[in-house]
Length: 119
Image (cartoon, rainbow, N blue to C red):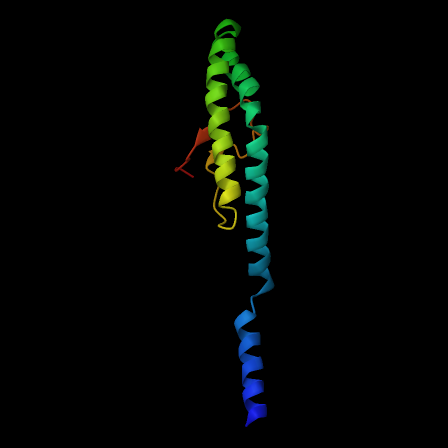
């Protein structure tokens, strides 16, 4: 009887900790991608300033692009840094990015958007 109980316990433990490798790899890759994205946005958010100076200069003119892009870039720096902090803290919960583009160097000629619900 004791041998049967040990076998039953061992079987129950093996079944309870089994997870298909495909699901485990997906979770690990999603979590690591979110942590990496958050860490990168935390420290590269300052790249929003030159990005927005160039963007506003292209859309209007270089005279308005300097101060306008500086103000807009400073606001986006705060937003990107805040989303970086949020992504690092909540990295165990794999979710989509709150900021589009995910990194400051992607789509350098496009404006940064937040909470993109249409996708």
